[in-house]
Image (cartoon, rainbow, N blue to C red; front, side, top):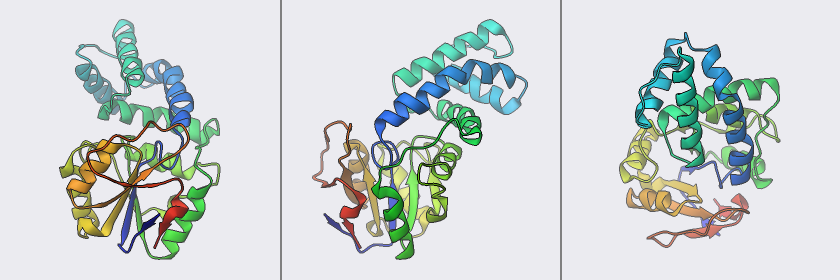
Length: 236
């Protein structure tokens, strides 16, 4: 159990609010299936072209999505990054754009653990500032929480952060988030299933809690973080 008397709760997504299996077996699978068609359909979109070029640079290739061979190389590079679970900012941006059509069409519906909706409502009603920090793009986060199995949960959320703020395993990223929220890090509780992320948040001065969810990997961390099986274990 975690007894928290601060003002804000910062949440990871994968392995914290939603299962790892859903992210890999549903979201990633959808992106892999539709990425080639998406790039071909939006080859003339300057924003998509810039994202694809940045993704290619990260993969060490020079390719043009307007060229069929170049598009194929970028698709294969993107799939390789997904298979390796690389936290690539252009990849996450591209995934978010692909998922948008899936969520809007109803093909995708986000999984959240049973305790999440009622806990978000309880915390929000108590005046807690709830925000999300995920490697998935801000756009993807908003889509995710507006299309869940429990309905639209975005009314409980006051902010979103992704890797454009900084890597999730670096202390400075959490300092930036605390500054953006406008409160001292000590007043923020960060919940995640990844020990290195929790360590970085603790180094920045935040309170931390490790989420032990079905399918999560064993926690490996430098600090001793309180562990919870459900958000109901957080007492305000």
